[in-house]
Length: 208
Image (cartoon, rainbow, N blue to C red; front, side, top):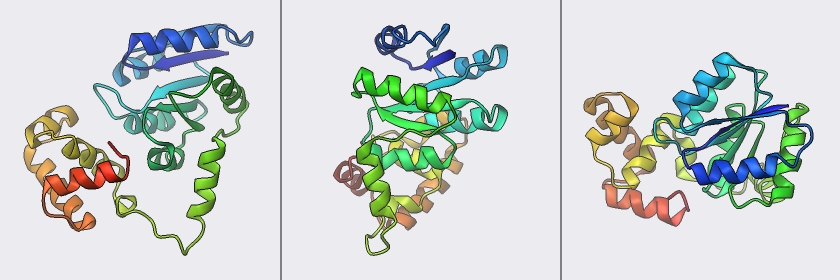
């Protein structure tokens, strides 16, 4: 089994490698520091599993996930994140991720997850499974941010973190005017008026 680790922190990649080296099934471990490098490596070689960080310096992990599944649909992608599972996992799974784990996951669970997804299965933790079950209950209201598209969700997080429109535009390779349009849509859907209100909402819902 060949596994590609995509994370911008070298110390995280080293820690993951140490865990993966315990697996006799693993024959090669590739490393990428950002989404661009990961996509480039995937063009050159076939990996059974990609461990993909959701927060990358050049692209949002969800965008990279979409690109991988569009070009290499048989590649199993296991998302890794510092973010609380219930806020990001459902979006990732809908986009084709094979599983979702937070970075504080025990080594044993990570190995179990890799074995599961490499065989074509899906892996979610017990806490996420319970959350998904709750989402099926129509009496439980969904969050306002659930109505946002993936791009709107990504820009909302950047706004909530205090980034200016031009900064967001540069990071996403879109114009300031386009970012401003997205902001208006986000504020309308979220029923908010100020960025400070957006930041407060995201903090209260553990999005940042």
